[in-house]
Image (cartoon, rainbow, N blue to C red; front, side, top):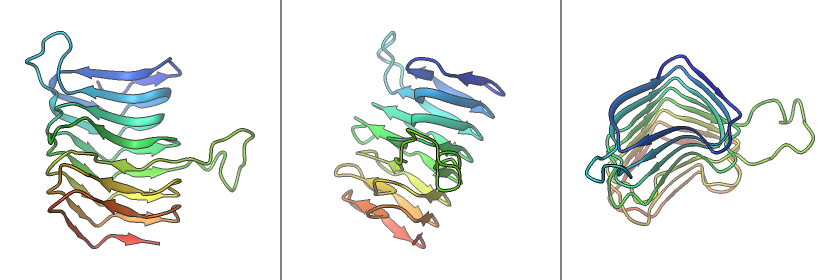
Length: 193
């Protein structure tokens, strides 16, 4: 799925149901509850797992930008703009230790429209971050997270672990920048201000 504009639907912009080896790139996805949802195990073919997916250079304006649930493996989430995601930019749930995702070079922040410069009536002050849940062996690197409210901007655990979290820039968020209760993680060279 390349170069599309998905706008103002009901629940979810794109659903990946137990699919593998696809590219979703250069899309505008806005006005949904969930921008992209990946379901780890197919509801139609229970043996199929959601794996090896590239989510690259998308503009995602939804309550939850990308939601991975169940046994998703090997996602490359790279170079996306996550704007006004009131619950989370990237949310991993019910992973049961699945993972091995690369989350790199993304921008996560509130839009200037409805922010300090151009306040809009009824605009939400919330912006969610990257939440790994119980996933395992993920790389989270070189992301810019600005104005995450409430914090933390990055979190993992209590299960899963083995993550490398490095080189991220976390600006002016509310609360804690990084919250890890997952085991055996390497966390270095992140700048939180």
